[in-house]
Image 1: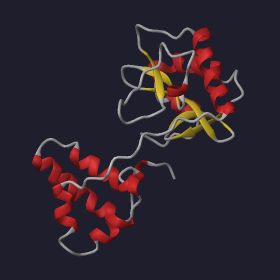
Image 2: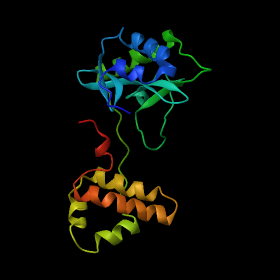
Image 3: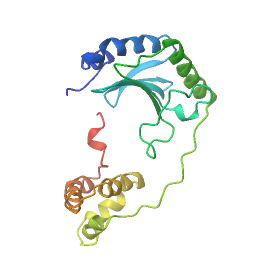
Length: 198
């Protein structure tokens, strides 16, 4: 998929949901939000603080709220797309059988803006101790520059690599993942750095 630079390009790249995305966009633009592209998707912010975004996938489209976990009044439609991974972010999903009630969605947007204005933030849960998988540990202690490069990474980047390996069920997959990440570690990159827009 080519790099997305504008919301128009994003909507054009998702013809199945073109009308629906455009309707959400027009609703969002009725609020005092700045429209931009982050992570190749339309994101709306106030003073560079992300408030919400819209996205489309094969079988659904939706709107996500960066501080949705802090909503008190408008919560009925909010779901956590990645339970245990995302802390405050929530989304509302729609498909061919469900359609947004724009008046109701307006209330969610207004509450998110109000939460931002009040400066309320969700306290992240305490970070778990990083446990280095045996397959990676074996390479780290075998000498060379890998251990030093790994230790120079931020704790978050080290954690990403460990989780990436641990999520694989098969031993062969785990070993393949270690081989795949070694060049990234040596170059000082995090697992997801290569996907970040320049």
